[in-house]
Length: 153
Image (tube, rainbow, N blue to C red; front, side):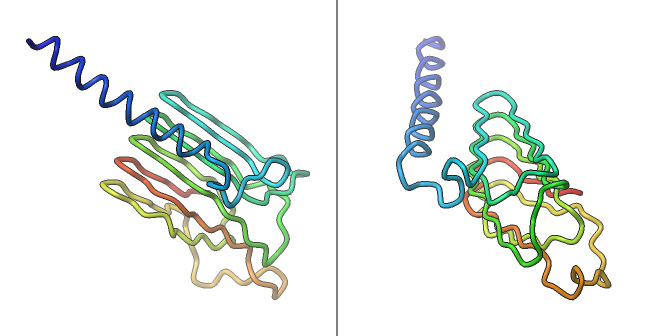
């Protein structure tokens, strides 16, 4: 009887994973990553890592994590002052680490459900804008379910 119960739990988990994969693959789901203009990171029970090179222009990303982790390093990305980038997130029982420069403004619009979003950068109240221009802005959209997002520099 215990084996039958564990098979039922396995089917529930498999169904949830299948639903997440199907939803993330629907056309029009992502607002940020559309091939040439954005990055796409996926980690299903594994890990994914991406470092944006200094010559690369970063426009946005689509990040999907299910029982895994992703790391996205934006510290060397070619971004103009005042640019706004969007990262669409879906994190289910996983974690995402975003490494961004100190001067960027990060808007955490993602919704945590039994999860969290934490900005661990040493933000200074006296950090001036870049040459009098507004700082680049990173907007996080999506949901964090039973997981976490950590923003660091």
